[in-house]
Image 1 (cartoon, each protein chain N blue to C red):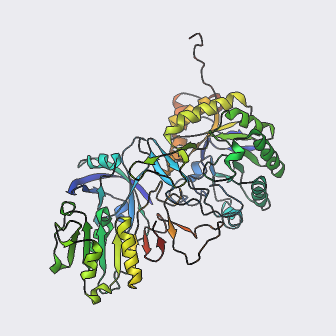
Image 2 (image 1 turned 90 degrees about the vertical axis):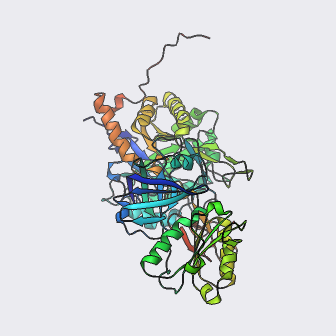
Length: 265
Length: 312
């Protein structure tokens, strides 16, 4: 775990409400960074907002790292006001990563909203290794997309309003794929509703899937115990007097889980 | 160089900066990232007799200059602590370790302390959490009742010769009454404050942002409350007071020391930067040097009285 000040090299709006920031990191970038891992960002030096914001790594090229973020509140709003040359304090790398994507024939990568970030990083890794993946990106409207719908290159966009790409959700796009394609493994990150839909689909169709989940965190490195998600246990009730059997720490055990490992609310 | 050694009860510390319970794990996890050897002491996450899963999510939410948590004392339990963690505090582990104990009954507190006392270890003492707002029974019940505090302190005092600190709750009418009970029953020191009961609401879903509705507020938002309570305790008690609440830099720490704290604890700040503690150690040293204060004890509680002639 490294903490460092990084120089922002770009901070631009990608689509409606969606921003990308890239910054030069000398130390974190020298680590072996893997898709699914995250870093934690300090908005500024003052203590109005004491907590860092955990964000998935969206890209890493040489010493430049990038994140994709959505403006949720005053913290991310302030983040969007930063300009090239500004400094930003980063802590990382944190968490586990997607696995097995390099050992299936066709990994299917699915991203929704800011959940697109680790999926793009995984896509970049697949391309680097010459692995043909399928990329499905979901949004409510066409304005929230910045990629182009391109089925010939196995890139499918979906919109709830049908303004771009497939009219419907990422699940609708997934179901349009051929049976042999569907038998690949799913790698997904996005809103909880999307992840829980994909979880049900994967389990019912007996398809392997890894889901990267989101959680509020105070630290990101296993100390605060705040970021828990319920584990999926076969036992009906778990003794109250256990530790780490009912809940899993997203920051250390996650953020990537096998679809059958966790329970959504 | 100023002498910054301090004594509390029968224990001595190289400096007055301690890491608060629940914000630094068991002290071992961060040993590779943080120069923990610089710290005065590390106070472990609360240990309970049996393991605890803790509360359902969401357990934390950020608020203005603070955060609310409701972790619910998630921990490995006393048996695992004694078997797996305690032996790691060997001679190579530099900072002094204070074990924080929580419970829901008098027996639970005592059994936990006795189990830890039953094995040989290098720990320097105990901090007793009688003020956790996030568990359904116990904990806080002791911390808001002077008689229960006295009885518990007395029993624990009989069970150990090591340093015994009672951690007090701000969620009471008169914190000095609880502090006096602890002192009379044999506590070596009190630490204050634990988190302040708080709440945060999501207006869209119309729910509390914390699964247990209320949680414990910490961070710079509670510093003024902590300072006032530490000053009241310092004035009312003869045993040392350890100041906690919103300390993020050396200047905050010096405020607490002037208000009467013999030592201070760094909590929420470690979540943002686990190096906050060592940085505060260096910052206090430089404050003492700059101000040519040769004995740290000359600073404790040396708040100057304002002119009292102002009348209403």
